[in-house]
Amino acid sequence: MNIDLPQTNRSRNRALVEFIVLPFLFLTVALLGGLRIGAESGAFIFIAPPLVTLLLATLLLLLMVRGGLLRLHQWVGSDFPPLTNVAHIWMFITIFFGSAQAFNSVLPERGLLHWLFSFFFLWTLWNNQFSSFDARRLLRSLAVLFGTAFVLKHMLLASLYSPEDGWLKRVAGTLLQGVALGTFDAPAFAAVTGYIAFFTLALYVAGLILLAFAVNGETIVTTDSVVNNRQQLSDGERPVENLSLSE
Amino acid sequence: MQSRTIQLAGLAFTIAYAAFIVWIYATEPRTFKEVTTSAEVAAGTYEINQEKFNSAINLFRREQFRAARVEWQQADPAQRDARTQYYVAYSFYREGWGRVYFDRELFKQGVEAVDRAIALSPANTLTIDDPDLQMHTAAELKAELEQGLERNWSDVNPLKVLRTRK
Image (tube, rainbow over all chains, first blue to last red):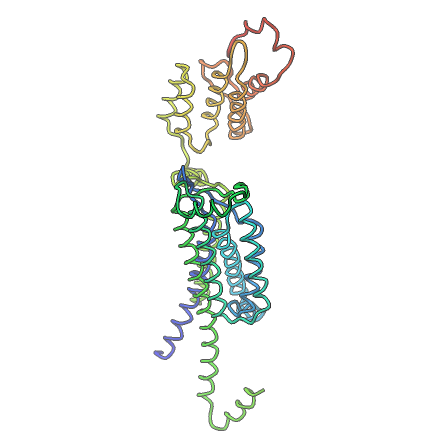
């Protein structure tokens, strides 16, 4: 009875993470990723994910499958009960929209910079499709990618478009002399937008880390069960088991 | 069995949460107050502030149309009450009406408000029993406002100054 308890707790906690915590985290990212606060009115502005973010999210999901962060065959298949399949597919959907909105939170809203950022994201994700990745490397790469985009948009660009005449504005003004400012047009948002974006990205990366643990936990569970089964075998049965394992 | 319960509960909870997010993005509330108002509308518990409505009616009768509209806006922030929207449209009509010309901008806003009133009323017909008004149906008011927006040769008729405001 006591031996089964850790196993029961483990499966219960895993179910909680997979079916409640992870979808909730990614849906919260989907909610906050498009939220901006108006600079003057302080009103909520909800920006639905642009089409390009859906494309970026698709590429990111492919990358997650390649990097082993999403193991489709372990979570969805004809061997599993229908409810489990539905719950896992639902989790993938929440990851997709969470990813799209995470991109939305770090993309400039319009103008040339929107397309420049989109291009760099596309370029990076497309290049990564052909690199060798594991879950850990992918997580690091994504944290750096989103972190860099956050710094560029919510610190450098926000400073550039702030109503106050900061040092960055003066430097950029000198560098971009002669370039039409309309090309780099961007709406000004309240400073709290940056905090919301930071919280959103932190939540997204935390969700991915939790997802990696859920995937690794599954591998550990699978390995544990093989080892446990092997320990319960008699001396006569072990050579047969060795043969089947080597096959 | 417990895992199945968690799966079911998780699905129900997160699908409800996703529906809430879709609703938020569809309605685009600008403040927390608007979030609660929209939620009341969705739940069917929305009611206008009757005190503000009565205060607006008094202002309307004293021909203080802009002040009346501010009060009606506060009485019906979600613009979901047909009667209030009818009065808002009427205030645009009375303010925009002129013996020599009509204010087209105000009349346009009046048409928008009366359209809202018609859309909100059951079977798209709305009748207001107010003896102070000369037009008692939304259809009459809409026709009057639309007529005011049209441009034709009768606009140069000097006898036009003899017409009366309804």
